[in-house]
Length: 315
Image 1 (cartoon, helix red, strand yellow):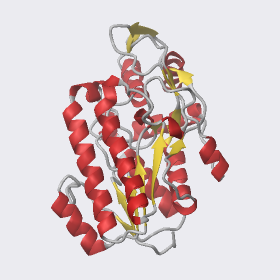
Image 2 (tube, one colour; image 1 turned 60 degrees about the vertical axis):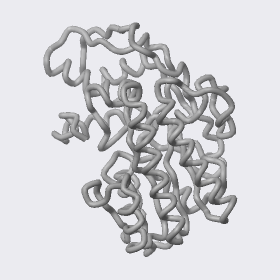
Image 3 (cartoon, one colour; image 1 turned 135 degrees about the horizontal axis):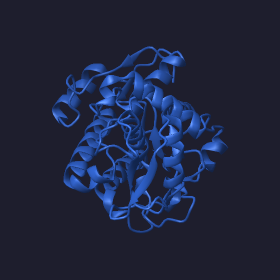
Image 4 (cartoon, one colour; image 1 turned 90 degrees about the horizontal axis):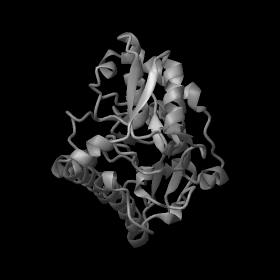
């Protein structure tokens, strides 16, 4: 990307989009086209088409999405599928119709099969069934990356896809019900500490293994790939390291300073037993993560403490 290129970051107020925006500016890209949801509803095809016709962005980072944890996904399957499909198709198609040089689509590691061989390589996509609790979201994301692939094959575009592992960091969602596991734990342990609770109840049995990537590291990879990668196969974004949910809760409690007992509600779902990405492709391209998990959790907790809105779960 040329330093003066016009770049559109879709979803720039979200955790991923805001990190990409910070990284672009850090690297000297200043000609950014940004629109809040109130300024541009990506579910509105006519509005999206008009925006692209008027602005003609040369590069697009598609980070906008409807996201949430296990409970949110289970309770709003239709909403997760419809909204993500509409956002993706509207933006990708409008970019194509208006001569966008390159587009980068942000997905999620949940696109891979529930019992995929570990660590999960990019080519295990669609080899077996998905995790039921987030199937609707995964199907939408798979459709987005496949649409990029099909445009490349049919029309010679240069649209790429990145599949991040579990993300955390500044501007995360700390909603008491709809958040992902790490921000949910930060909020739960913080409130338990503030209220002097003797115990905290966590979902499942703590056995699932998860991988976590600090969102600013993802943003660095996203800009790197936009400049250095072309291809139909998605690129995994992760650390190549995993931790059990039980050990994660202990780590978060330690960072937050909660000293009480941790208990487990085994009536709640665990989700996929293991989700570790094979990140050899990104490494071969010359990229690796920088932020270790405990350091990243400290940074995330500082952001949580300094932002009243996210402490309320409003973001």
